[in-house]
Structure formats: C-alpha cells, structure tokens
Length: 189
Image 1 (cartoon, one colour):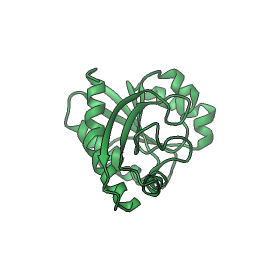
Image 2: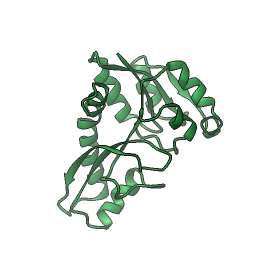
Image 3: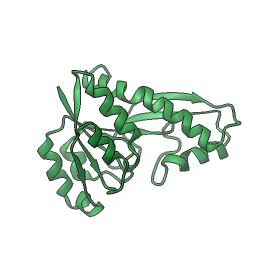
Image 4: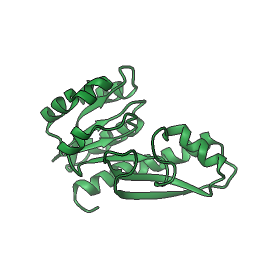
C-alpha cells in the first residue's frame, strides 16, 4: 500500500475527499496531513479520519524542518490539495516526480503566483471564457509549471458568476482528483 502525505492550507474539502476515498481502497492511504495554517479546517477533517496532522510555519518549510518531519512518514507520494505556499526545492529534490498538485483552471491559463481559488474564477468570468476546468500536474520549482498529468474541461455558459464557476470546478475536483491519484499509484497514468 502506497503512503500519501497531503499538504493543505484551508478548509480541506479536497483533502477530506482523498482521505475518504483511500480509506476504502487497498491502493494507498493518507498517512499524514501537513498544513501551514493552525486554524485550517483541514485539521478537524484529518482528525475525523484519525490522520496525524503536522502544523508548520513558512520558515519551517523554507529552512528544511518540514522535510525532516516529512521523511519520518516515508511517503511514496505527496499531494497538494489547496496548499498555497510555494513548494521548496529541498522537498522537490528529495521527492522527484512524486509530488502532485491540483489547480482549478486549465493550465497554462490562469497559473502562476497569486492565481488560486476565487482569483482564478473571477479572472475566468471577467475574460468571458467559454470553458475552464481542472489540471492535475507534477510540482516543480515554479508555480503551476510542472508536467500535466490530467485535465478535465468544464463548459461555461457565459452567464455564471465567479461563485458559480467555483461550485462547478469543485464538483469536478471532487469527482476526479482521488481517482487520478489512484491511477498514478497503480501506474496507470
């Protein structure tokens, strides 16, 4: 069984979906959740699944303490599920091609620093995009530039608000993220 460590910064709905999914499979299990936010909703969600939580600061991440703690869990894969800090080179180098992220847009559009959550959805609406979607990709040293693993398009009518786009994207994230991770664990993707 493959060991997964999830990094999240917020409410943890994608992280919870992953924990719930892998609780029912023999493919992998979430062995820890790491967060940089001591008040993140993901903490309570992890406790619900008896998954240990590691809370750290940005300095801990940059200075290498997070890598030391991470190594104790010996993860096969690291999944970023709404993690907002730039991932450091020391972890990327220690786990090459073993770190994946989900992005709520069709990269390379709407990627890069500052492009997350509602910032993306507002830009999509303002630019009158006919489609958006999700991208699951490997993590490298640049925001949202790692090799793309999977994309799913969401067609827009042009009448949606940014909040409505967010709901559509979230539904697609919930549907595809765990199964794509499972495909990666099974080396089918």
